[in-house]
Length: 185
Image 1 (tube, rainbow, N blue to C red):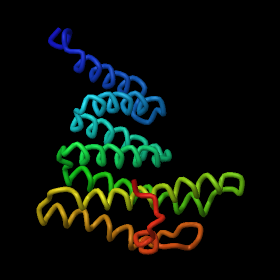
Image 2: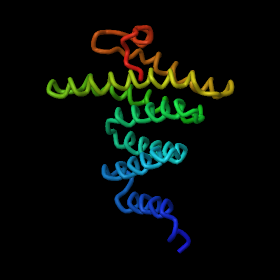
Image 3: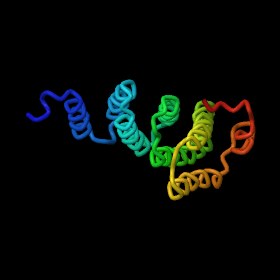
């Protein structure tokens, strides 16, 4: 009764009910969450957008599904926020970087174990995640954060450097970081 007149609350309740009924592992659960987050982003309600997208990202990663489009979506909305002079929270950047590291690590495994017919797609997704990570690192330099928050962001960068991901031409993160042709926006 309390949410009858509140459209946002009704939408959120619908998402909660959908997830409870279908289960968080169901592949049909994350898309409506992402869509609702996009509605929030379009209305410049970025905090709600990011909360929903982080939830959907974690659901998709738990289900071992590719998240390269999800990660890029975060980078794009963070970039939009910076362009609009909206604050980007360091903890949100760090959360997405952490998910990116996990996805790149899983992508390395997918590339190694993919059958020949799926190798090209697996490599494309993996490389997209590397470029998105670099894009997110660039965005992180535009955020205001304290020493502890910067330390958490740096930890995710270190974690990825430690994995030493390479693109199909053998280039490392450093190669791409200094290459003006690296797509980061």
